[in-house]
Length: 401
Image (cartoon, rainbow, N blue to C red; front, side):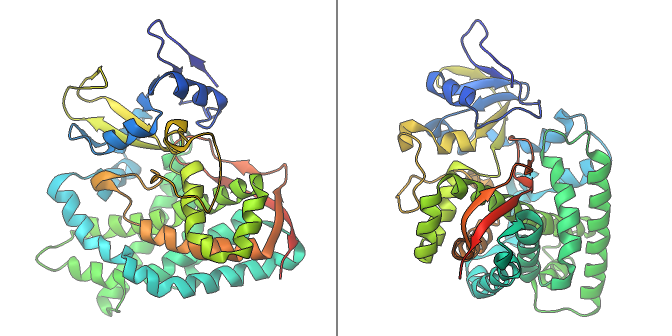
């Protein structure tokens, strides 16, 4: 990993390198000296207070809209789909799409499905727990995340392998290797677009009481979704609902392996599931940075920031800032300041109720069945930047009841 300090004393990190690690000792040391660092993408904000303030700053807009262009992808199917994201809209266009998509991710809907989430977690874990080993991504995280999004959107449960395979490949667009992986990413996008087209055609022929039917109705109502918005939005919902949960579950396992006493506590007290989710997302979120872009020149903490500047808010660094949380600790019983694992401001994650609900159900199930887990040496991880998580996570454990 490359870190230097120019003449002005501000740390500089080469975050374009696949071996860069946002959780490194070098980043922690930089956070002690400065509230920000410089990177090839722009400014990186390292501390909690500045992150919280900038998430709501009126001179900043959502910034990941320029991610692909910064990595040399400016045209083609992926670039077109990327521009369509609700996350990349502002003002009334953003509010309109959010209003139409919100019902799929409401707290009320999520609460009605929690028992079904738990049943899926039990079914998957019971299939391998007696072996005392598993490949966690393939045997639990991927099928669980895909089946949860299928439940939410009214998709056939049997479609989960298709959803998982292509959503995982599409998720490579969020990483620093996006240009290298572009053919694989665009093949996955084409597959999911085809799946969405077939699903929409079926619902137009016979509407159900599910969220996809609601979107189809919105396609023809006065507050209409265009045909492209309907298809692109549905692909985003499938992908977004899968990718975050899959990655975050793997990161949760890694965190608890490092804190075995907390894993045993969760097994004994499953009611701590919700707090366990918050604590994991504070110290090891899958979304490593939240991107904003300056819409005009402004000054912040004495630093002049020109219009067009990219600012990355490093959520993991902010979530472990000792100025707010004290020395590093992981405690699922502790009361903490809010974390930034779901972003913030008007672009706060649309699916946070779902992610919180499905992981709250899954983690206690796993803690009771997978006692004293450890990760074998052949685990494979995505780069520790952008969005991260395990590609392959072999576990060995003592079977629980």
